[in-house]
Length: 179
Length: 391
Image (cartoon, rainbow over all chains, first blue to last red; front, side):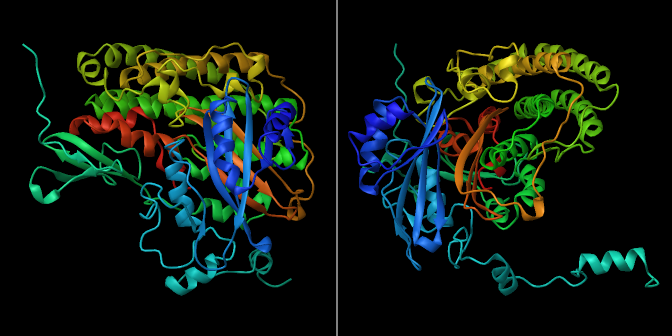
């Protein structure tokens, strides 16, 4: 993994290698170098399988981390490529799509658009609803989306369902006479 | 005399690659297969555009089963996540438990005991058989062979009995938790498992005779849904779908985990990459799992701890880090990407199910030019479970 990192570092401004396991590493690359790096990995280094594409919301840093996890089956190793992009408090973040390299990426990008508010202009059906229907609130997988508040505002409380303090409830059940 | 198909009724392709479908022309019809349909795999639907009885475009729609698991997990402590991960996938929930537990163990620096690793492998193989049995029933049912589903449901039920005595539960076992497994094997388990395995083998022979040598099944499944082996990586195809096309993708061999390096087996391969080949690979894969269970029961240690010592789980904080753990489930590569930030809660968990690619981009490609009556058979042949798409 270190040799691979050295080879790539001579071509791209990569960050330090995080060697999680002998067969799994993570590197960070600036957003503008993502595409050439992914093409180098898929065409020259045997990382032909896009395992997943997902995002992590680092709200305190004002950044989204996009993780492109690639696998080289022949060499039995995986490389996670991290890209940090600005996270606007309101509105969409933007990133270039990679659906022309891996068609399956279009599905991931569509999901990220809906769940995190990260747009991939030009990605097929990226503006179509994927999982949510008629969603008008902020993207729900962002850290500042409050599920409880959303539920209380949008759904009616069903009578008959009470929340009890577990300690008091068990005490009442075990010692009904209070002794 | 040569035959030239009349393509005048087919839609033209726009420069951006999408089809120019004019629904007012009277040539095309929109048809929804699902979400309530016997020929659909779970809670999803396919929006078909048909010309006559032939599909010209298909779009997968999900969202009928979204429960926001990944968000739920972020709001729970590491041990509170454990009971909900299995609910991501009903027919084969144990991979969620294993992948989550292994990811937490790796980031927390915990090693599961040797005996727990053997029991985990046993459970994963038992789950694989269950999942394949559901598949065989669904695949044959999609082509009108209803009785096969009754046979496979019967033997699946026997395996559920073994799950029940081992874990206390039939569907959601909640047995593989961070640190190990909840218990060892009950007394006499090996003998009862052997009886179940024999019954499975006997049923497999019947299935082979009645389904795989059936003229109707062969005529409809051979050649249906061909996946070009060159597209396996491009479309993220893994597991039996890839192996049926001669691409030997099996995580158990490619990146061995648990005790698979100590077990003797070869991944089942096919060549034709069509619906029949995929069904055949899965049928033979059941036999591999049966053999693996026998090996595990013969080789596994019968005493020793099954749980590592965990910190106080109510105040359990895991250092900042990220990892990815994968396993070979019955449908292909199943994985968990876990990110921690040093707090008592996961920062992010992403579930990578094989259906995510198989039921979306791949199905939408394969479905074009398929007859309406074969759509169900094609879908089932990819062995997709919608909850993995909309975790």
